[in-house]
Image (cartoon, rainbow, N blue to C red):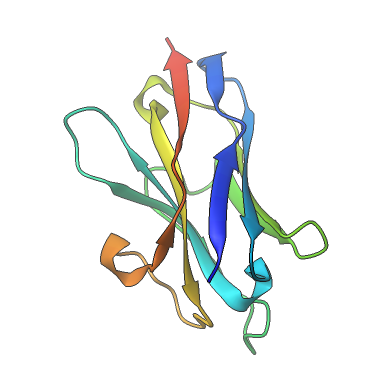
Length: 128
């Protein structure tokens, strides 16, 4: 099974950028559809972005409404890592960000229950 470790969180002013990393070990992250979720204090876990597995016939990325146009998900199979580039950050983006994986996911997954493996999370704080 795959293990996931997030990094890259921190504190930034509104309008700034951060790039989160989700490093995989144990198996190739390319074998997994990978998602990013976030959870703010007192709120439910929210879908952020998804990328399907690298063998899918139709390479696909998909974004939550709150981040579309500002965030970009990508994968580097050689580094066994999935990234989340976050631009034009807003105070509402403040949350703990988690990556999650599900094996051989070809179609878009947006529900937390659809993922089998999770990282421990990385904190993002955006000051207004």
